[in-house]
Amino acid sequence: MGRSDQEKGYEALSPFELKNKLISMAQGRREKTMLNAGRGNPNWVAIAPREGLFQFGLFALEESQRSPHRPGLGRVAQKQGLTKRFNDFLAKNSGKPGVAFLDNAFGYVCNELKIDGDDFLNDMVDAILGDHYPTPDRMLELPERIVHKYLEQEMFASSPIGKFDLFATEGGTAAMDYIFTSLSENKLIHKGDKIAIGTPIFTPYLEIPRLNDYELVELEIKQDENSDWQYPDSEIEKLADPAIKAFFLVNPSNPTSVSMQQKSLDKIVELVKTRRKDLIILTDDVYGTFVNGFKSLAAVAPHNTILVYSFSKYFGATGWRLGVIGIHEDNIFDKRIAALSAADKEELHARYCTVELDPDHMKLIDRMVADSRSVALHHTAGLSTPQQVMMIMFSLHCLMDKKGDYKKMAQDIVAKRFKDLYESLGMPYPDNAYDAHYYTTIDIRALAKTRYGADFAAHLVKNYEPIDFVWCLAAKKSIVLMDGGGFDAPNMSIRVSLANLDDDAYKAIGKGVGDLLAEYHQVWQMSNQKAGGKNP
Image (cartoon, rainbow, N blue to C red; front, side, top):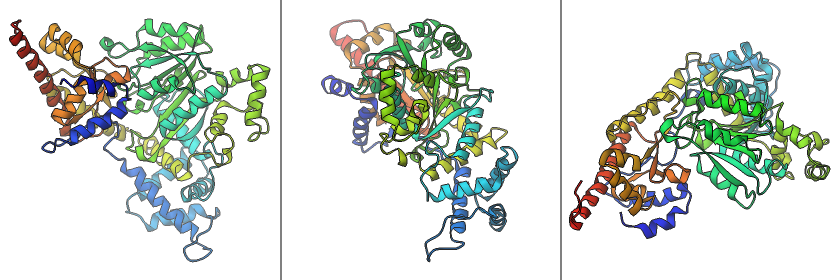
């Protein structure tokens, strides 16, 4: 408390950069154990699909060494007889970790997805060995089919909405970068255009549009804190303005961690079918798997929507960098590119003519692949093939899980921590079927008003910098949380990640937040007593 000058300097930083300062402050209190619930890196790891991957890697090495060039130098695997040799490998290694997973996965691929066994094994052995550039570079054919099936189950609620073209990327972060670049390069957004941002939101979505590369004008579509963090109809109605070129959102939201209710989805669907057929929608749905029955905007407005999904959070795989962009094969983006002026088409023809024989009919998603490598390096584009095999293993893990056991386990982890946090804070926890429980946002001003009255809450706002609470949490309690204001959540709110610490830590965090607020209140009481004012 009372470090307002120094705090003002840090308020200009992204909350992800401020976090580094808070960590250094929390680590300086050697008598305490630091509790860092700032970032969303999960502290669980999905074992079965990784065991399957590593066992499959051993099989691929055996195949490569059947007729080696030299000792220690294998060859490209031979397709003929692969299925028999794979079944022999499974039999020989029966009982080892990952073997039963591979057996079940291979059966699912052949019997339910109707993929030829030799074709699947040949492509996957080559992919996991990583001995060829990705071909196609946007995404290998079989991984695209299998990941598409996974997205149908998890993002589209198994709705029959047709085919999405997929682009495998180095996590959701790379996907965001590629999308902004290609929308700009292909004249779908221009400097000075107005775009809508669903807030609160993951900070980079606020920061990227403001960069010199884009210089977009932002309009906030605000969730209502008092309505379970939903978008009111009045906010969605802002999208009817034809000056707004695009709507970017995270769903379920980050940091509030709540998904859109069906009535909000319906409102947007009505809008794009009638008044805003040209509206671009970009939805980042990485937390969708933590909400039962989740349905993406890509499922209800497929022709207008660019989907971003990452495997990182659900499977404890942030280090793998596994993301995907999805665009429906029948979309407004390709139609709008086709309708550009002759001068714009000529410019784009010149940009892509070295990588495509017919660049004028090149899909936006294929342009993204080229743009991801500055076009000139298009021949080396694409996510590494072993990473794409990991995507397959994760996807098959959930596709085979007919009872949803993995989903229940992952959801139970964060839900328990969510409840423990609120109980230790002495607050009733929000009971909301749309809540992913991956993060939670606690409005410290609202908590102060509820616990100690409106005068004290007003005192906090008037006398302290917005980041003072997270600053003091780090300095006094060795607790590192994100500043909610940096996500355009209410000032002096805090974002808690329920994913990255052991269960007991959340009881300590809840207690620490409550204790610190009590200390602020005690300081206020003492100042009132000295001033001769009321002592609430």
